[in-house]
Image 1 (spheres, rainbow, N blue to C red):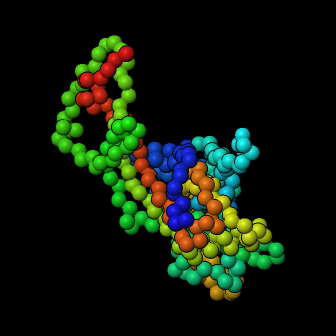
Image 2: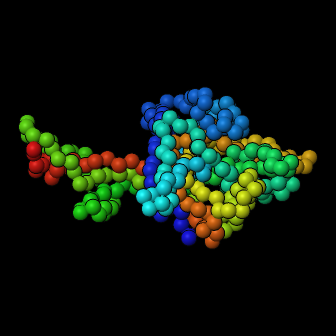
Length: 295
């Protein structure tokens, strides 16, 4: 299995993401609200405000394993159903690390740069460094406008290019009676975020699961979170006396919860998270309003 995005079951946008979006839209400074960050949950740079010149951005990914439950079908077979998040949930139900390394075998610097929320943990008397966030590469991400047309349940997406007509809109003719039926069209702002996990990345997650649980069975990812934050250079060490600097995250807040279900034991050759981030607006154009059917 080469892909982890075959089925997105449910999406919950958080009030913390909405709060951040509102601040950005209005040009207001960011204020850190207590009990809203993963920094507080993992006690990493907890309570530290980003510089006033920096606004958090949604460019981090978290994974968890408690976004599902199993129920019995009528024929006695097992079925997996999602456990959705609330808009006020500031954390995952069961967040798991992408990497868990002994302190004497920590990640090299060029690989450590992919991760954040570095936490020291002890399992069976052995000290480890866990990494609970993965940075989302942004260099190839392009935001674009699209129009989505749904015909007989099939959605067709085409680029949307504004014209002078959009700057000089005609007023639609709307009847004083009846109800305007909904449109089959919508317009959206879209940006595709992709995080590719190679065989070595999958092996790190499998290893972390085995160390933390003592089990060699396949771990499950059933919840994903898109998180915002700001990078900050901090000082750390890896089991020796020498210290080094690396990028940690400040003010890390969950913006979006995604319910899904994937057994990583079947993705040993690699996996890809592909997520479409943006907003969709229903369209009521001249065909939909001026020529609408009224009930």
